[in-house]
Length: 195
Image (cartoon, rainbow, N blue to C red; front, side, top):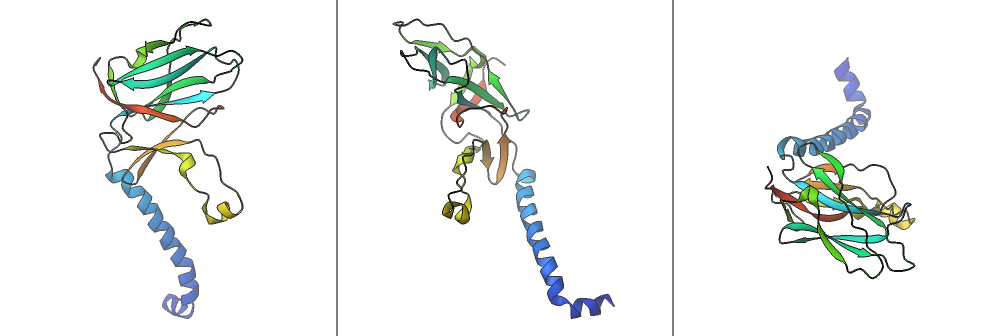
């Protein structure tokens, strides 16, 4: 009886089975990298900027010099409102993100800019190349396309997510829900001399 039903309704069986096979294939294609590609081996530093109140009296920029993270602090120009810049670290061992706290010096109008070490990552070597030594690369969410229909109807979305990927394995980086700009890559933490 089941063989006769399958023969008489082959088209119906194919119409049901084919989408299930395709879905199964895509599920398997996304799961295999999780099983075969090792997890990330390095922490990631990145920044976001927020225009929420209170606004900053100084502007802070980050740069890596000789493998060390430095913060450039400048007094805000008159009648300007620079965003508050936040430094984040994605910790590869726990796959969690936390804000890196550091003290920003107070500067008065006319004070020269100051370069400070970020104490929380002092003694750690930072690489600024886009690909980490373990092969992971940063992917920003705003690089994705809404597809042909989305392009035609102006449905381009502005996605502020950040992830890292290697050989098909994608690790999402979660951030608290706030108003900020798209995350900006600073560098990979490749060694910790303090440990």
